[in-house]
Image (cartoon, rainbow, N blue to C red; front, top):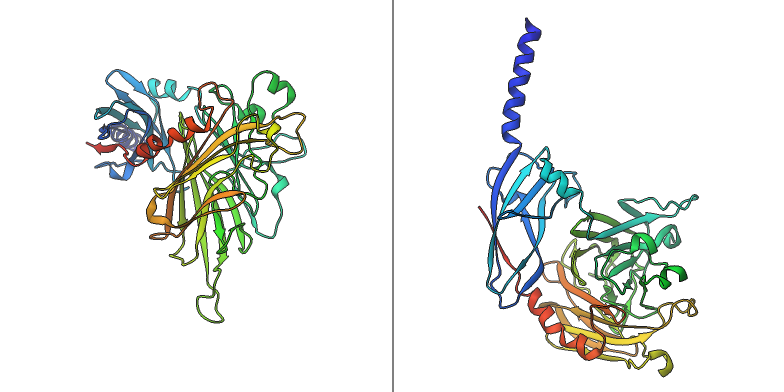
Length: 425
């Protein structure tokens, strides 16, 4: 009798539970700008949804009868979803309302949507004896440990259909660039080390040799006269926060950084920096969020290097080095040079354009030296937020001259500074 009663109670609890594992909400997205928006990111924080009584594991987004791909993201590493993310296209001044279904168990439509090919690739891998390069979620090491060659591809890699990036796991933390002819995902196959056979088949390649320059938007310490690598710290790490299929967020962190100057005589304080890089499907740019453990008085810098400035004219292929360093927060360059000085026979010179948009509130100075165009910046409210981007001349659908690249940057900035408004009902 007791067992029978227990069974009834269990069934009753199951029925109650099934009534609470789905939730429907409406999300309205408004474009108030005069720009058409393509692949515009939409973020819905689950904490903002009223009466959300469970943590969803699956989601379905529809605009009318049209299904819109989406993803649920765990942003704080507790294995529970925090945000719903999807992309949309909007005409100038247009609004769209999306019907969102959130659930613990997937419907057939959710399952079908989750099978679609990802539009973003993210990898953090280690070298192993069998050359399987297993994926890991996080790598952390003392700053004195040189594990640069133990991290496959030498650091975190991320890619959209348009282009790819990698961020070196060492004191430089330079951002390297992968340019390609066709709009598709390639890094699972080439992994930044494109072979001659792959090149013959039209695959892309590494297109930048940074050397001692700042690269494309790399975040550096500022010595007072030039960019400086991250050496005066205790621990460095890289972590995959979320990895697609439509958005990737990766984290770099430096712990136990010593202040450049004594806070007071005889006393050196320390702080931590966490760098978050976000890439969206259909985008070539990266959103960069630098977060400090406390407000600091040190200065930092970012910018773009002068590509091809040290190359001979024959190497430049008619692309002379050009650049702009504007007071409104746009710094950009265009040029052509070998992307790998050790593989000149395999990889020929590549023409590329690079850019950074830095909001004026962070800029304290601008500098130009032999290799770089640089903004000197200071954090506000213990953070710095900016964007970086690049293009490769080899792209079929892209920019092929400095004039074209520079002309595109005002609209890029305007698109960044006029985000859509999201309302949940």
